[in-house]
Image (cartoon, rainbow, N blue to C red; front, side, top):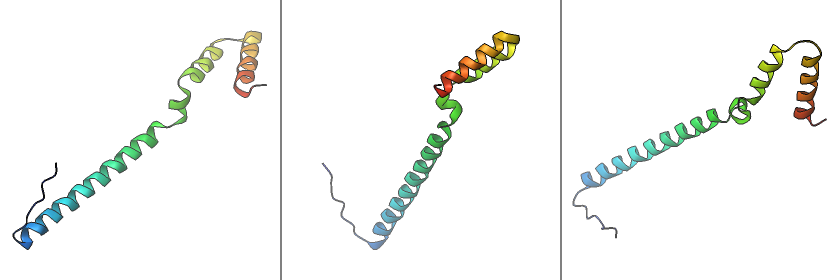
Amino acid sequence: MEVKKIYTSFEEINRDLEILKVEKELAHEKLKLSFEDTKDSITAKNILGTVPGTAVNVLGALSGPIKNLGVTYLFKKIFKL
């Protein structure tokens, strides 16, 4: 249950208003940081993961017709051909 504070001077009111203002600014900065962290975490690499990069590395190690088949298969899977 919330207890109502009784003020005895304007200085007390102004002090509490200043505290509330700083707390509000702090909460706003935390929200901005949280938004930036979320925005940074939503990148193509994080969404897709490491599978495409690994597939490209494996295909790079192959040569000749096997490589061509692998690239064709990969493109078909990516672009649903």
